[in-house]
Image: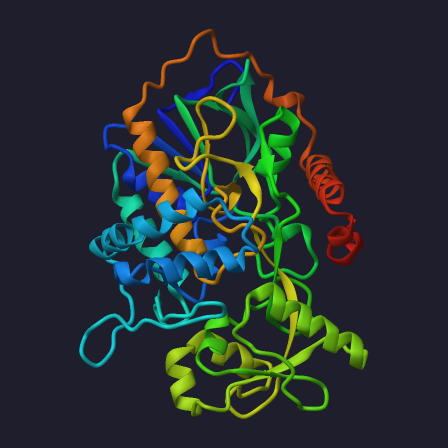
Length: 441
Protein backbone atom coordinates (compact mmCIF):
# COMPACT_ATOMS: atom_id res chain seq x y z
CA UNK A 1 0.00 0.00 0.00
CA UNK A 2 1.68 3.16 -1.22
CA UNK A 3 0.63 6.77 -1.56
CA UNK A 4 0.80 6.83 -5.35
CA UNK A 5 -0.39 3.28 -5.92
CA UNK A 6 -3.88 2.85 -4.48
CA UNK A 7 -5.65 -0.48 -4.54
CA UNK A 8 -8.60 -0.35 -6.92
CA UNK A 9 -11.81 -2.37 -6.65
CA UNK A 10 -15.50 -2.01 -7.45
CA UNK A 11 -16.89 -1.97 -3.91
CA UNK A 12 -15.29 -1.59 -0.49
CA UNK A 13 -17.11 -2.94 2.56
CA UNK A 14 -15.71 -1.96 5.96
CA UNK A 15 -16.77 -4.61 8.48
CA UNK A 16 -17.29 -8.39 8.37
CA UNK A 17 -20.44 -8.76 10.46
CA UNK A 18 -23.88 -9.80 9.28
CA UNK A 19 -24.57 -6.47 7.53
CA UNK A 20 -21.29 -6.33 5.62
CA UNK A 21 -21.31 -10.00 4.63
CA UNK A 22 -24.95 -10.05 3.53
CA UNK A 23 -24.43 -6.91 1.45
CA UNK A 24 -21.50 -8.61 -0.28
CA UNK A 25 -23.50 -11.75 -1.00
CA UNK A 26 -26.41 -9.72 -2.39
CA UNK A 27 -24.21 -7.77 -4.82
CA UNK A 28 -23.70 -9.04 -8.39
CA UNK A 29 -20.95 -11.60 -8.81
CA UNK A 30 -19.30 -9.53 -11.54
CA UNK A 31 -18.48 -6.86 -8.94
CA UNK A 32 -15.06 -7.08 -7.33
CA UNK A 33 -15.66 -6.67 -3.59
CA UNK A 34 -13.03 -5.99 -0.95
CA UNK A 35 -14.05 -6.46 2.69
CA UNK A 36 -11.71 -5.19 5.38
CA UNK A 37 -12.19 -5.79 9.07
CA UNK A 38 -10.40 -4.36 12.07
CA UNK A 39 -9.52 -7.64 13.80
CA UNK A 40 -10.06 -11.29 12.86
CA UNK A 41 -13.00 -12.11 10.60
CA UNK A 42 -15.05 -13.63 13.43
CA UNK A 43 -14.42 -10.83 15.93
CA UNK A 44 -17.58 -8.88 15.20
CA UNK A 45 -20.56 -8.21 17.42
CA UNK A 46 -22.86 -10.12 15.06
CA UNK A 47 -21.23 -13.31 16.36
CA UNK A 48 -22.30 -12.38 19.88
CA UNK A 49 -26.02 -11.92 19.16
CA UNK A 50 -27.75 -14.53 21.30
CA UNK A 51 -31.51 -14.08 21.30
CA UNK A 52 -32.73 -14.39 17.74
CA UNK A 53 -34.13 -12.65 14.70
CA UNK A 54 -37.70 -11.42 14.30
CA UNK A 55 -39.94 -12.32 11.40
CA UNK A 56 -43.48 -11.52 10.35
CA UNK A 57 -45.12 -14.95 10.63
CA UNK A 58 -48.36 -13.88 8.98
CA UNK A 59 -50.02 -10.68 7.82
CA UNK A 60 -52.30 -10.95 10.85
CA UNK A 61 -49.33 -10.06 13.08
CA UNK A 62 -48.26 -6.96 11.13
CA UNK A 63 -50.09 -4.36 13.19
CA UNK A 64 -49.03 -5.96 16.48
CA UNK A 65 -45.37 -6.25 15.42
CA UNK A 66 -45.39 -2.68 14.08
CA UNK A 67 -46.88 -1.34 17.31
CA UNK A 68 -44.47 -3.34 19.49
CA UNK A 69 -41.52 -1.87 17.59
CA UNK A 70 -42.88 1.67 17.74
CA UNK A 71 -43.79 1.48 21.41
CA UNK A 72 -40.39 0.13 22.40
CA UNK A 73 -38.81 3.00 20.45
CA UNK A 74 -40.96 5.60 22.27
CA UNK A 75 -42.63 6.37 18.92
CA UNK A 76 -39.51 8.13 17.71
CA UNK A 77 -39.04 5.45 15.06
CA UNK A 78 -39.40 6.24 11.37
CA UNK A 79 -42.68 4.51 10.45
CA UNK A 80 -41.66 3.91 6.82
CA UNK A 81 -38.42 2.18 7.85
CA UNK A 82 -40.32 0.02 10.34
CA UNK A 83 -42.85 -0.92 7.67
CA UNK A 84 -40.13 -1.82 5.17
CA UNK A 85 -38.28 -3.96 7.71
CA UNK A 86 -41.35 -5.91 8.81
CA UNK A 87 -42.75 -6.43 5.32
CA UNK A 88 -39.34 -7.56 4.03
CA UNK A 89 -38.72 -10.02 6.85
CA UNK A 90 -40.34 -13.18 5.36
CA UNK A 91 -38.36 -12.83 2.11
CA UNK A 92 -35.12 -12.08 3.95
CA UNK A 93 -35.49 -14.99 6.38
CA UNK A 94 -36.32 -17.24 3.45
CA UNK A 95 -33.12 -16.12 1.72
CA UNK A 96 -30.85 -16.83 4.70
CA UNK A 97 -32.51 -20.22 5.20
CA UNK A 98 -31.82 -20.98 1.54
CA UNK A 99 -28.19 -20.01 2.17
CA UNK A 100 -28.02 -22.66 4.88
CA UNK A 101 -28.84 -20.92 8.16
CA UNK A 102 -30.45 -23.33 10.62
CA UNK A 103 -33.11 -22.19 13.08
CA UNK A 104 -34.47 -24.33 15.93
CA UNK A 105 -37.62 -26.31 15.24
CA UNK A 106 -40.23 -28.01 17.40
CA UNK A 107 -41.08 -31.71 17.52
CA UNK A 108 -43.13 -31.38 14.33
CA UNK A 109 -40.27 -29.78 12.42
CA UNK A 110 -41.85 -26.32 12.37
CA UNK A 111 -39.93 -23.20 13.41
CA UNK A 112 -39.82 -22.80 17.19
CA UNK A 113 -40.73 -19.14 17.69
CA UNK A 114 -39.90 -17.54 21.02
CA UNK A 115 -40.77 -14.23 22.67
CA UNK A 116 -38.70 -11.54 24.36
CA UNK A 117 -39.36 -8.32 26.23
CA UNK A 118 -41.97 -5.94 24.75
CA UNK A 119 -43.14 -8.54 22.20
CA UNK A 120 -46.77 -9.50 22.53
CA UNK A 121 -46.41 -12.46 20.18
CA UNK A 122 -43.90 -15.27 19.70
CA UNK A 123 -42.20 -14.15 16.46
CA UNK A 124 -38.49 -14.67 17.13
CA UNK A 125 -36.48 -17.38 15.36
CA UNK A 126 -33.39 -18.65 17.15
CA UNK A 127 -30.54 -21.11 16.99
CA UNK A 128 -30.15 -22.10 20.64
CA UNK A 129 -28.52 -19.00 22.17
CA UNK A 130 -26.10 -18.53 19.26
CA UNK A 131 -28.33 -17.06 16.57
CA UNK A 132 -25.86 -14.37 15.54
CA UNK A 133 -23.04 -16.89 15.31
CA UNK A 134 -25.14 -19.26 13.20
CA UNK A 135 -26.09 -16.54 10.71
CA UNK A 136 -22.68 -14.86 10.57
CA UNK A 137 -20.69 -18.08 10.28
CA UNK A 138 -22.93 -19.30 7.47
CA UNK A 139 -22.61 -16.05 5.52
CA UNK A 140 -18.84 -15.94 6.10
CA UNK A 141 -18.32 -19.49 4.85
CA UNK A 142 -20.10 -18.60 1.61
CA UNK A 143 -18.25 -15.29 1.20
CA UNK A 144 -14.91 -17.07 1.58
CA UNK A 145 -15.82 -19.27 -1.38
CA UNK A 146 -16.91 -16.45 -3.68
CA UNK A 147 -14.21 -15.61 -6.23
CA UNK A 148 -15.30 -11.97 -6.45
CA UNK A 149 -15.03 -11.35 -2.69
CA UNK A 150 -11.70 -10.73 -0.95
CA UNK A 151 -11.63 -10.53 2.84
CA UNK A 152 -8.73 -8.78 4.56
CA UNK A 153 -8.52 -8.95 8.39
CA UNK A 154 -6.39 -6.85 10.75
CA UNK A 155 -6.97 -3.75 8.64
CA UNK A 156 -8.42 -0.52 10.04
CA UNK A 157 -10.15 2.34 8.23
CA UNK A 158 -8.33 5.55 9.11
CA UNK A 159 -10.35 7.96 6.96
CA UNK A 160 -12.45 8.21 3.83
CA UNK A 161 -11.30 9.83 0.61
CA UNK A 162 -13.79 12.49 -0.46
CA UNK A 163 -14.14 15.66 -2.44
CA UNK A 164 -17.22 17.83 -3.01
CA UNK A 165 -19.31 15.42 -0.92
CA UNK A 166 -18.41 12.44 -3.12
CA UNK A 167 -16.72 9.42 -1.58
CA UNK A 168 -13.92 7.84 -3.62
CA UNK A 169 -12.48 5.35 -1.19
CA UNK A 170 -10.77 4.91 2.15
CA UNK A 171 -7.42 5.31 3.85
CA UNK A 172 -6.48 2.26 5.90
CA UNK A 173 -3.76 0.81 8.09
CA UNK A 174 -2.73 -2.85 8.38
CA UNK A 175 -1.56 -4.77 11.44
CA UNK A 176 2.07 -3.74 10.82
CA UNK A 177 1.29 -0.03 10.77
CA UNK A 178 1.57 0.24 6.98
CA UNK A 179 -0.90 2.74 5.55
CA UNK A 180 -2.42 2.95 2.11
CA UNK A 181 -5.47 3.90 0.07
CA UNK A 182 -8.22 1.88 -1.57
CA UNK A 183 -10.48 3.45 -4.19
CA UNK A 184 -13.81 2.08 -5.42
CA UNK A 185 -17.07 2.97 -7.13
CA UNK A 186 -19.04 2.59 -3.90
CA UNK A 187 -18.17 2.26 -0.22
CA UNK A 188 -20.29 0.54 2.43
CA UNK A 189 -19.64 1.22 6.11
CA UNK A 190 -20.59 -1.69 8.38
CA UNK A 191 -18.29 -1.06 11.34
CA UNK A 192 -20.77 -1.71 14.17
CA UNK A 193 -21.36 0.47 17.21
CA UNK A 194 -19.33 2.11 19.98
CA UNK A 195 -19.13 -0.42 22.81
CA UNK A 196 -15.33 -0.33 22.92
CA UNK A 197 -15.52 3.23 24.25
CA UNK A 198 -17.24 2.00 27.42
CA UNK A 199 -15.70 0.15 30.35
CA UNK A 200 -18.84 -1.95 30.78
CA UNK A 201 -20.11 -3.23 27.43
CA UNK A 202 -21.24 -6.43 25.74
CA UNK A 203 -19.33 -5.42 22.59
CA UNK A 204 -15.86 -6.42 21.47
CA UNK A 205 -13.36 -3.79 22.72
CA UNK A 206 -12.17 -2.87 19.22
CA UNK A 207 -15.69 -1.76 18.18
CA UNK A 208 -15.03 1.92 18.83
CA UNK A 209 -17.26 3.82 16.42
CA UNK A 210 -14.54 4.78 13.95
CA UNK A 211 -17.10 5.42 11.20
CA UNK A 212 -18.93 7.91 13.43
CA UNK A 213 -15.78 9.90 14.15
CA UNK A 214 -14.90 9.97 10.46
CA UNK A 215 -18.44 11.08 9.64
CA UNK A 216 -18.11 13.94 12.12
CA UNK A 217 -14.81 14.96 10.50
CA UNK A 218 -16.38 15.12 7.04
CA UNK A 219 -19.78 16.60 7.83
CA UNK A 220 -21.69 13.42 7.01
CA UNK A 221 -25.11 13.61 8.59
CA UNK A 222 -25.58 11.72 11.85
CA UNK A 223 -28.78 11.06 13.76
CA UNK A 224 -29.56 10.36 17.44
CA UNK A 225 -25.99 9.71 18.56
CA UNK A 226 -27.18 9.81 22.18
CA UNK A 227 -29.64 6.94 21.65
CA UNK A 228 -27.49 4.20 23.12
CA UNK A 229 -29.10 1.10 24.57
CA UNK A 230 -28.03 -0.13 27.97
CA UNK A 231 -28.84 -3.82 28.25
CA UNK A 232 -30.33 -4.64 31.66
CA UNK A 233 -28.70 -8.03 32.20
CA UNK A 234 -25.00 -8.61 31.72
CA UNK A 235 -23.22 -11.14 33.90
CA UNK A 236 -21.72 -9.23 36.82
CA UNK A 237 -17.97 -9.69 37.17
CA UNK A 238 -14.99 -7.89 38.65
CA UNK A 239 -12.89 -9.00 35.68
CA UNK A 240 -11.89 -6.50 33.01
CA UNK A 241 -13.01 -6.85 29.42
CA UNK A 242 -16.22 -7.48 27.55
CA UNK A 243 -19.32 -8.20 29.62
CA UNK A 244 -21.11 -11.48 28.94
CA UNK A 245 -24.71 -10.90 27.90
CA UNK A 246 -27.51 -12.87 29.51
CA UNK A 247 -29.98 -12.68 26.66
CA UNK A 248 -33.44 -11.27 27.00
CA UNK A 249 -34.66 -14.59 25.62
CA UNK A 250 -33.87 -16.10 29.05
CA UNK A 251 -36.46 -13.75 30.54
CA UNK A 252 -38.72 -14.62 27.65
CA UNK A 253 -38.56 -18.23 28.82
CA UNK A 254 -39.47 -17.33 32.40
CA UNK A 255 -36.39 -15.94 34.16
CA UNK A 256 -37.11 -13.40 36.92
CA UNK A 257 -35.13 -10.57 38.49
CA UNK A 258 -34.56 -10.33 42.23
CA UNK A 259 -33.18 -7.58 44.45
CA UNK A 260 -30.78 -7.89 47.36
CA UNK A 261 -33.65 -9.06 49.59
CA UNK A 262 -34.51 -11.81 47.13
CA UNK A 263 -37.74 -10.10 46.08
CA UNK A 264 -38.97 -9.74 42.50
CA UNK A 265 -39.22 -6.03 41.68
CA UNK A 266 -40.32 -5.60 38.05
CA UNK A 267 -42.04 -7.10 35.01
CA UNK A 268 -39.09 -8.65 33.22
CA UNK A 269 -40.75 -8.49 29.78
CA UNK A 270 -41.00 -4.72 29.58
CA UNK A 271 -38.80 -2.84 27.06
CA UNK A 272 -35.08 -2.91 27.83
CA UNK A 273 -34.80 0.70 28.92
CA UNK A 274 -37.67 0.26 31.39
CA UNK A 275 -36.10 -2.87 32.91
CA UNK A 276 -32.71 -1.13 33.07
CA UNK A 277 -34.23 1.81 34.96
CA UNK A 278 -35.91 -0.58 37.41
CA UNK A 279 -32.60 -2.34 38.06
CA UNK A 280 -30.77 0.96 38.58
CA UNK A 281 -33.35 2.01 41.16
CA UNK A 282 -32.90 -1.25 43.08
CA UNK A 283 -29.11 -0.92 43.02
CA UNK A 284 -29.37 2.63 44.31
CA UNK A 285 -31.89 1.58 46.96
CA UNK A 286 -29.63 -1.17 48.35
CA UNK A 287 -26.28 0.48 47.61
CA UNK A 288 -25.18 -2.41 45.37
CA UNK A 289 -23.76 -2.65 41.85
CA UNK A 290 -25.86 -5.62 40.73
CA UNK A 291 -29.17 -7.45 41.11
CA UNK A 292 -29.90 -11.14 40.43
CA UNK A 293 -31.51 -13.28 37.76
CA UNK A 294 -32.74 -16.85 38.11
CA UNK A 295 -34.64 -19.30 35.91
CA UNK A 296 -36.67 -21.42 38.32
CA UNK A 297 -39.09 -22.82 35.75
CA UNK A 298 -36.44 -24.84 33.86
CA UNK A 299 -34.47 -27.88 34.88
CA UNK A 300 -30.71 -27.67 34.53
CA UNK A 301 -30.61 -30.06 31.58
CA UNK A 302 -33.37 -28.17 29.79
CA UNK A 303 -31.58 -24.82 30.30
CA UNK A 304 -28.29 -26.35 29.15
CA UNK A 305 -29.99 -27.47 25.94
CA UNK A 306 -31.86 -24.21 25.26
CA UNK A 307 -29.13 -21.79 26.43
CA UNK A 308 -25.84 -23.72 26.21
CA UNK A 309 -23.47 -20.73 26.19
CA UNK A 310 -25.32 -18.79 28.86
CA UNK A 311 -25.60 -21.86 31.08
CA UNK A 312 -21.90 -22.62 30.69
CA UNK A 313 -20.81 -19.00 31.30
CA UNK A 314 -22.83 -18.89 34.52
CA UNK A 315 -21.46 -22.26 35.64
CA UNK A 316 -17.91 -20.99 35.06
CA UNK A 317 -18.69 -18.25 37.57
CA UNK A 318 -20.10 -20.85 39.96
CA UNK A 319 -23.83 -20.43 39.31
CA UNK A 320 -26.53 -22.77 38.04
CA UNK A 321 -29.02 -20.26 36.62
CA UNK A 322 -31.93 -22.66 37.27
CA UNK A 323 -31.11 -22.95 40.98
CA UNK A 324 -28.95 -19.99 41.98
CA UNK A 325 -29.30 -16.23 42.00
CA UNK A 326 -26.92 -15.07 39.25
CA UNK A 327 -25.62 -11.48 39.70
CA UNK A 328 -26.32 -9.20 36.73
CA UNK A 329 -25.78 -5.52 36.01
CA UNK A 330 -26.68 -3.16 33.14
CA UNK A 331 -24.06 -2.60 30.44
CA UNK A 332 -23.74 -0.69 27.17
CA UNK A 333 -25.10 -2.85 24.39
CA UNK A 334 -26.33 -1.20 21.20
CA UNK A 335 -26.31 2.04 19.24
CA UNK A 336 -29.74 3.01 17.91
CA UNK A 337 -28.39 6.22 16.36
CA UNK A 338 -25.52 6.52 13.93
CA UNK A 339 -24.90 7.63 10.36
CA UNK A 340 -28.25 8.75 8.98
CA UNK A 341 -29.43 6.76 5.98
CA UNK A 342 -32.53 6.41 3.88
CA UNK A 343 -34.32 3.07 3.46
CA UNK A 344 -31.66 2.04 0.91
CA UNK A 345 -28.63 2.66 3.08
CA UNK A 346 -27.66 5.92 1.35
CA UNK A 347 -25.88 8.48 3.51
CA UNK A 348 -25.69 12.24 2.93
CA UNK A 349 -22.49 11.69 0.93
CA UNK A 350 -22.63 10.37 -2.62
CA UNK A 351 -21.42 6.78 -3.17
CA UNK A 352 -21.19 6.22 0.58
CA UNK A 353 -23.56 3.75 2.27
CA UNK A 354 -24.00 2.63 5.87
CA UNK A 355 -25.65 -0.57 7.11
CA UNK A 356 -26.15 -2.50 10.33
CA UNK A 357 -25.50 -0.88 13.69
CA UNK A 358 -23.42 1.82 11.98
CA UNK A 359 -26.51 3.14 10.23
CA UNK A 360 -29.45 4.97 11.70
CA UNK A 361 -32.36 3.90 9.51
CA UNK A 362 -34.86 5.13 12.07
CA UNK A 363 -36.16 1.62 12.72
CA UNK A 364 -35.35 1.57 16.43
CA UNK A 365 -36.27 5.05 17.58
CA UNK A 366 -35.07 5.74 21.10
CA UNK A 367 -34.90 2.11 22.22
CA UNK A 368 -34.44 -1.09 20.19
CA UNK A 369 -37.02 -3.86 20.38
CA UNK A 370 -35.33 -7.19 21.13
CA UNK A 371 -34.16 -9.24 18.11
CA UNK A 372 -34.80 -6.48 15.58
CA UNK A 373 -31.07 -5.80 15.11
CA UNK A 374 -30.15 -8.84 13.00
CA UNK A 375 -33.27 -8.35 10.91
CA UNK A 376 -32.52 -4.67 10.34
CA UNK A 377 -28.95 -5.54 9.27
CA UNK A 378 -30.17 -8.12 6.77
CA UNK A 379 -33.04 -6.10 5.30
CA UNK A 380 -31.24 -2.80 4.74
CA UNK A 381 -27.89 -4.25 3.66
CA UNK A 382 -29.72 -6.09 0.88
CA UNK A 383 -31.52 -2.89 -0.11
CA UNK A 384 -28.18 -1.05 -0.25
CA UNK A 385 -26.69 -3.84 -2.36
CA UNK A 386 -29.67 -3.78 -4.72
CA UNK A 387 -29.40 0.00 -5.16
CA UNK A 388 -25.64 -0.19 -5.84
CA UNK A 389 -26.22 -2.96 -8.38
CA UNK A 390 -28.79 -0.84 -10.21
CA UNK A 391 -26.80 2.41 -10.18
CA UNK A 392 -23.87 3.80 -12.12
CA UNK A 393 -20.70 4.04 -10.05
CA UNK A 394 -19.11 6.66 -12.31
CA UNK A 395 -18.01 9.91 -10.67
CA UNK A 396 -17.04 13.31 -11.97
CA UNK A 397 -13.56 14.64 -11.37
CA UNK A 398 -10.30 12.98 -10.47
CA UNK A 399 -9.65 10.98 -7.34
CA UNK A 400 -8.24 13.32 -4.68
CA UNK A 401 -4.57 12.83 -3.89
CA UNK A 402 -4.18 11.66 -0.28
CA UNK A 403 -1.00 11.01 1.65
CA UNK A 404 -1.81 8.11 4.00
CA UNK A 405 1.23 8.87 6.12
CA UNK A 406 -0.04 12.34 6.97
CA UNK A 407 -2.42 10.78 9.51
CA UNK A 408 -1.64 10.46 13.23
CA UNK A 409 -0.40 7.19 14.66
CA UNK A 410 -2.87 4.69 16.08
CA UNK A 411 -2.86 5.81 19.74
CA UNK A 412 -3.33 9.47 18.88
CA UNK A 413 -5.98 8.67 16.30
CA UNK A 414 -7.97 6.50 18.71
CA UNK A 415 -7.93 9.22 21.36
CA UNK A 416 -9.06 11.85 18.85
CA UNK A 417 -11.88 9.61 17.57
CA UNK A 418 -13.10 8.89 21.09
CA UNK A 419 -13.15 12.56 22.01
CA UNK A 420 -15.11 13.42 18.87
CA UNK A 421 -17.77 10.80 19.60
CA UNK A 422 -18.07 11.43 23.33
CA UNK A 423 -18.31 15.18 22.81
CA UNK A 424 -21.13 14.62 20.32
CA UNK A 425 -23.00 12.42 22.81
CA UNK A 426 -22.48 15.06 25.50
CA UNK A 427 -23.76 17.77 23.16
CA UNK A 428 -26.88 15.76 22.35
CA UNK A 429 -27.73 14.53 25.86
CA UNK A 430 -25.75 15.74 28.85
CA UNK A 431 -27.83 13.71 31.32
CA UNK A 432 -27.12 10.42 29.52
CA UNK A 433 -23.46 11.34 29.19
CA UNK A 434 -23.10 12.10 32.88
CA UNK A 435 -24.82 8.85 33.89
CA UNK A 436 -23.17 6.38 31.50
CA UNK A 437 -20.20 8.04 29.78
CA UNK A 438 -18.58 10.57 32.09
CA UNK A 439 -16.25 8.07 33.75
CA UNK A 440 -15.08 6.88 30.34
CA UNK A 441 -13.00 9.94 29.47
